[in-house]
Image (cartoon, rainbow, N blue to C red; front, side):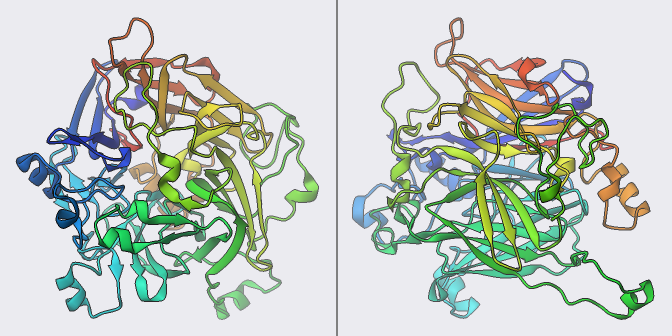
Length: 576
């Protein structure tokens, strides 16, 4: 096990309980959350703990041994129509991701508030309103007075399941959301937290017009927040009558274009070319740029955002070069041929984002694509696995957005034309930076079709080269968590000190000596091959980010199989 992991903890989260009182849930994503904890000691010493997120709803259901709240994806309460109609309460599944920041550990679910966990025992400490920022109640508002909506159990806020840690300012960045029914809009509010959970800027609020379903993920650049709004509408009747879950009432609108929202961060102004002297600059305070909402392509659906950056991409000639080249936009040894005609246009009028999204959004019920699969020919952790024959292929897309002309250019990221991928991530020290060159993702196949994740890949955004590793027959892969080999970490004491020395919040130069590909990749594998016990065995595999194709440098095998998880976070032992 690499020494930099010593003393650190990896947390993973995902749905894991799929029955109550002998009755199976209707959908995999209705599964109650379970958090895994891998504590790395010295050498090869690793301690494993897992525990369900025992929210109030989970505890209640455990006591009565039946579902007490309706599942968002269709799992009903007992009692048929009379037991479900007009009961709009939903369960906080706490089953999607982990936010680890400032000594706190939260289990996240995008249709609920964060649930705080004890960092060691994983005991549930209850839902949090993050210092009064998240109102309790269903996350819809009819515009009534707060006191009235509170009594009705509505007017609440949900919190994103995908916060991001920003290396520019050493901050955790997240957002809440609420559906404004009367306006047919979703209101999002962005927050930025220091390591001690204090805030140096007021929250930023932005409305997503003609929107009925909040985005799943977002990105943070040096100057902006980037959200991509998918086009879904809500048919509320079946939900109110207890006939369907809220998620089942989402209806795709493929004929409408996705909308890219670019919102300026507080305290960040674009660096524009000027002939003013320093004295003149000090006397003239520039106006903050407005938020921009731009129509993108139709028939699109974006899920996970790898990262975004200000400016246009660094263009190279696809297939030319050496993937071991240094990461800066200049290429000292000449091994990459850059397209200088395109690379000149990196001004602040452009924003670039890389997302994992479907190749085409079909019409009709959104969850129709998630139908349950036929039985697998070998035992798996849950029979609720989706039918990949019906789910569209997921690709790595590149969005280039001109904030002045409102032009949106969406293309498949070079090198990924034949791939099916998901859960893309970058080295956390390079998130939001234009010089970020490598995207790591789970890999399903290179046959232009959908399928379960069976390996991993590293995409070179400059050359289009793709390094691949395949897990082998009957082995499934989860999302990768990326740990810099240097041991440096966003929010670490050394990085904070360097940021202060370099001028306060801005730590752009604090990581100038980092080599992006020098990182460890940590991911869960579920192995069902010959020699494994019936039902399979899970293991934690560690890969070298600079040599992914070599395969795992270490494997930590569990004694059993755990259900397929979603997302996670690593907390270093000694922050450098």
